Length: 382
Image (cartoon, one colour):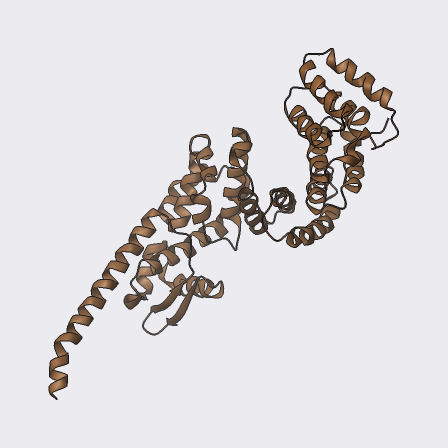
């Protein structure tokens, strides 16, 4: 028995189904929906039906039967977006082996509506990943990305697309892309729609990708996100580790090693993690220096990032190649001259440091103004 979409059911079959439901525990809902159905008030019926399918629990098989016997009789009369919303909920009640067929048939029903199609096909992609059809999903993501970009403004379906994209990159082991699209996904949804367990899982995996991504050197957005609160009790060490990386704190990294070395992905990438933390330490050191005093001796860099002095030059060259800092290296005097550090989302301590520097700059400007004012009479006389 296949759960394809059809419109060839008779009204008597629909009425029989409604009568059966009215004898159940949610009779009032069905009396209301029967009234809308008989009066052909499709908008009101759609709203009532969405509310009904969202409000469980439902017996196994009930929603799939509702779709076959009731909804399929008038699904061409309701909006494609509403049909996709109902269809996604119903799909969870379809036997696993027939779920893809159901959703692909549904996507044809809503193909004229980009948002509805994206929502359905994102679910199709997720199921294909679960079934190991990863390469097919790569092409699907490219197609959906074009549809998403054509929408212009951010809509709720962006969340469905970025959730699929993040899941794909997670399976592929692409930490950088997973981190980027996971944050985009979180920016499109209401966190209250996630369970506590889902919040913890999302936070943990995004945290890992931030640590392991070789292009992720900005932790501020993640550290400021309320999602991270879910880990402060469940897995506090990873929050501490993220904070340590954000500061480039090599001492804290070593202190937390007994915890993070138990995580297989982190343990496998120990050398890369320590180099990344050292690079962030160099960025933090540069950030904390006034622009007039960014000629930093190799020995000071080495002390800050816990490296031998003879490895400092390579570290700075790596940072410059990644565009984390800009400047030059004076090998003769063993000094690094840094003129710029990549902008980052700042935490409170970094904002305080920035504020301190702005105050110092303002005082310096005021002093210059006063010096000029004192010299003006003398200049005029001359």
